[in-house]
Length: 390
Length: 231
Ligand SMILES: Nc1ncnc2c1ncn2[C@@H]1O[C@H](COP(=O)(O)OP(=O)(O)O)[C@@H](O)[C@H]1O
Ligand SMILES: [Mg+2]
Image (cartoon, rainbow over all chains, first blue to last red; front, side, top):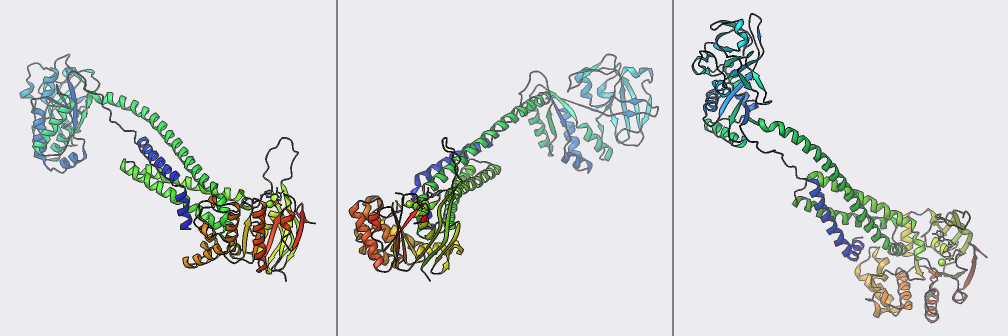
């Protein structure tokens, strides 16, 4: 049988080489089509002031803070972010405050002093740099209210809440009212928002390494950086500061571009879906073509040999012997082609799926050619081939 | 008990229907052999004569087990061949029967030597023995100088002698010759027939199918066929 295989292979050497070239070229195309280069979309910087959003919404950060590890480092990082001279770091975390008088300060921001200077927010007879502070150790906080609250409270009033950071009672002292018609801009929507019905609580102050302060610190990391530098430079410098302090990585988001990027990437995805579909179709069509070509070539080789099969039968081979020869011929051809394509795919860094698809294709080829030959053997009544025809 | 016995042998071919414009509906079955009864003794030389299409080749193919009869029994040395499995049938073809056909049925890309040795290569026989047996046949048939030639380099008569050598390689007791002279000129045809005759004299049973009465005259007995039956 091996002798017969060798004979078949030797006889069809050129076809064999052709098949090999064909399959390797095909596998290469297969790989190319399989990796339609997934690009990252970045819309590019926009002019003017950039803002960058950073937050501690990062698992390792939270875990560190919750467990009180590296508390000093975090406060250091926070301070260096706040006081860094290349940008303005404005934290503005909102959370509701409910007083015992059932007044509900829904629009409440936890801010640094930078916030007021950045937006040019002023208060009559009040210096935010000195009077706006809290002692977290003693649980005394100052609060600045919008002008709308002037009718309810006056400077120096105190009120107690339950919902700030902990369920414990917390006392706020009103230290100032923001002047009428002061605005800040929402960094996301770029909307101008009136401060009239807002309240502001300072972040900076004496911090103690306890749960409340750690929660506060975690919250206060959420802030915006306003800089004339681009997002990437800002991000670089944040990483630099982090490195200096020696702790993990904050989540840094390019707010200016996030919105645009989302839009853009959606469009890109949609387009890429279409492209993917198209490419998928092309690969399928190519695979079917290749399977047909190989199947056809193999079948024609074996068909051409049917006269020889008749002679073999005459000389004492059985039909099943011949079928075995056919199958092993088809198998060995496909196996070698398959090996070559696997090597090509590996060299051109194709995916496993690519290889799996190819295996499937070769299985189909083997099945098609074998069935075809089987049929040829049956239909081509071999007795006719060798019978005398006068 | 006879050497070869055919009882009510019938062969029907399934016609693959092709659409033809003029013919009416053609039957989907063609009866090629119709209730054939035949009994042969060892050492016979019979000729089956008849026009083209009367069923000679079909009959030889049944006896050569290349074709299964649709009905009836075929006994060889009292063995019911119909019942044998594929392996036994191929062994029978390999060692009991030699085929000689009109167009020689040689493998084009094998040398004369390899063609003659082909039936031996299907059995476990040592190279040395193969060589001995092939060379002795090459000598007997006077083609030893052609051993390494390919079939296309030979004349028709030489090709037929190669085919006969291959048929003889396993010392068969039966030779099925289907129009062995059909592709040869008269002189070479006579040579081939004389060769077959001498083989028969050595005890090999020969069944010859031909449409030529001159060729048939070499046989000891002539059976005439028409439309699948003896007449
Ligand atoms: N494989 C086949 N399929 C259908 N019909 C066949 C087949 N082989 C032979 N026949 C038909 O059977 C009849 C007998 O054929 P065959 O035995 O070859 O005749 P002969 O050898 O006497 O010329 C013919 O009519 C032929 O057409
Ligand atoms: Mg015939």
